[in-house]
Image (cartoon, rainbow, N blue to C red):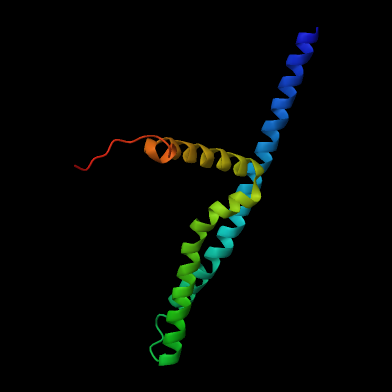
Length: 131
């Protein structure tokens, strides 16, 4: 009886953990979609404007300069989004933060283990290589 109750409690706790992870994943996806729309809307709008004004031939030099600046700026917003996804995930999900910290710690541990031995143990006697 106690064993069945313990197994049932473990199943319930696993279900709660999965539900929490699902909510965090949904939050990450929602934030990503909103930010994606915000960052691609200016580019899409400007391309629509360029399509509508393509047949206009009497644009002044100032107008052409402004259009070039806006085009560069809107293209930059499209390229900024992929680099923001990491920071958005860090801000939106504690599970992502924990997993990132775990992976980062593992990488550091592996890097430290691969260092030469004389860097790890400074008091170790190392043979001389010069004659």
